[in-house]
Length: 149
Image (tube, rainbow, N blue to C red; front, side):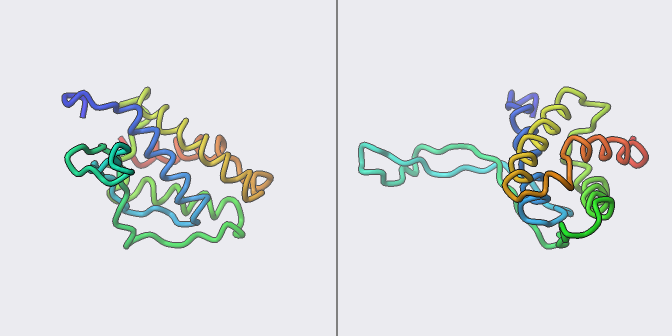
């Protein structure tokens, strides 16, 4: 992605936001989801908003939720955190999530995107008195350190 001169930090931020939405918005662990780059047709306002298939926007898409498990946000905080951390570290997710030691600045973009989205969702769902996104990401880093090298 660096050779293609893609906005790696922007993609990492979007991935963090996506994990936060899965975790705190949808209550799923995000196990083995896949991120892909794709395109979508742009609207041509000069043609009344019709889709213009010749001009496309590149976007990050999330797919393959087949191995995701539901996580009950009513469970104990430690159990919820463990379900999310485990899915982020095990399996193929570790290939997508920036490594916090090898790519610190890219991981920081991931973390910042995760925290920002999680805090909005937690506030809206009124679960911010039980869960803390900053605390969760700190625990994730400690947990991942034991499994990732």
